Length: 141
Image (cartoon, rainbow, N blue to C red; front, side):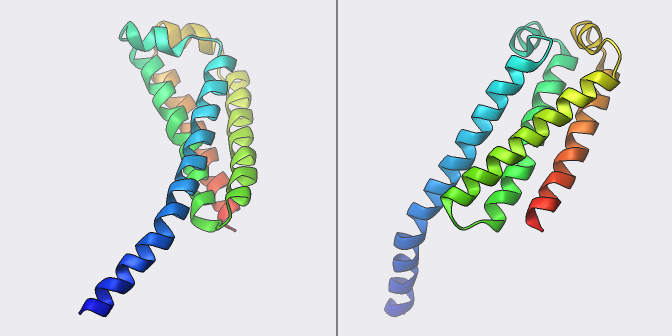
């Protein structure tokens, strides 16, 4: 019994630092991606959320999830921090490009989100999540 417990403690001692570094790397990429996203959007998500605008909250939440999905796939398939960092940057860039394309396809997105049009927000989130899932699958190879 003690040898099994000792093995578990040894595995935890060697695996936990790796997990924490990889998690910190992915979270840093997520924070950076969200920061860039909020800078390139034509509307101010923080203000919209503070004002209770459901469409603004939905687009911000959807973007966070859409950025996290391919980062999660990168974590699941990579064992080295540099690999996670490089593919994570690629994932974030692809998601930001998807948002930029979606803004071109949805007419007057800024006005619709700022006026609280949840249908437009849902369409944008759908595009972002769809691209995120395909992005994640491609990265998982």
